[in-house]
Amino acid sequence: MEVVITVDEGAAARVVAGIVERLLRTTDQPVLGLATGSSPLASYRMLVEAHLAGELSFAGASAVLLDEYVGLPPGHPQGYRAFIRHHLADRVDLVPDRLHGPDVWTDDLAAACVAYDRLLDELGGVDVQVLGIGSDGHIGFNEPGSSLRSRTRVKTLTSTTRADNARFFGSLDEVPRHVVTQGLGTISDARHLVLVACGSGKAAPVEAAVEGPVTASCPASVLQLHPHVTVVVDEAAAAKLANAAYYRETYAGKPSWQEL
Ligand code: GLP
Image (cartoon, rainbow, N blue to C red; front, side, top):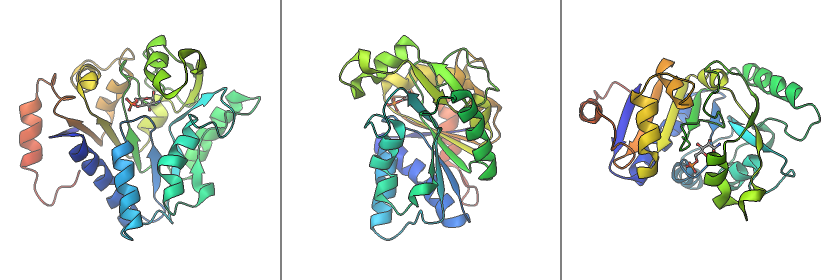
């Protein structure tokens, strides 16, 4: 795991956007895993700007969603497919039918979850998976207690997560209770995991994920088991990291031949 501590949220977004840009420029038919939430938004804006400047194309890429609410009508603005379309996919040259997400509108959710994992395999796996982190340590919608080897499945949101996400809805009552999320095992199949977290509210979950024990009680701690992880945090989100000085020294002294 490499931890990159940046001066602010904009610099963190620059690092994340840079990783995605390198993937798109150097890989034939890249598969990009996209997180929702506010954390990756600044990096998505940078990717859109690079595309509009004629510097970046998504034409050969596929994109896959990490998770989706169950119970919202198709096209609901807070649905995660709509969110990703609005903030990224519809603003770049990604081929529309190469944006994939779990089918949460079927009567057979269990079969849709299996089908989604199969689809990820058929695409050849995810090259770069962008992740945020919830205040309770979740990634995707894998709430505390999620099996570290779980596959895509239905989960029930904690009251903490529903309260956190209520800001996107008219009221807490409108936040769905159920979701389909890639499992921690599914997420771990991606070749490169890039977690971005900014602000003091993320300091505790970042500390638990990066330096705490590997435990289902902090789902993001599963990142410690993955061979290629980049955690990008601003100063505020890094505030509780015991080894911050080492992370800074490592990144500052990174040889030019060594990429993130
Ligand atoms: C939701 C998403 C997660 C995201 C989390 C944090 O729960 N399912 O993928 O990481 O929110 O959101 P934010 O980045 O807005 O803090």
